[in-house]
Image (cartoon, helix red, strand yellow):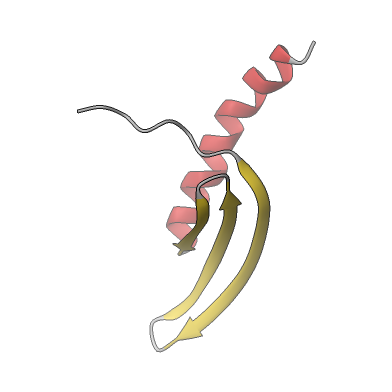
Length: 64
């Protein structure tokens, strides 16, 4: 299976919605390919924060 190339974020918006199941965070990312909307519960948000925390040192090191 061929992997798609990454989409470059150009704009990021964050908001929340609530329904009978509780609250969800909505992360809307405008990319070079269009808009990507991601609905997050607490577990998904924690996983994304953890992933970004592991990537961040590598990004910081590449800027030096």
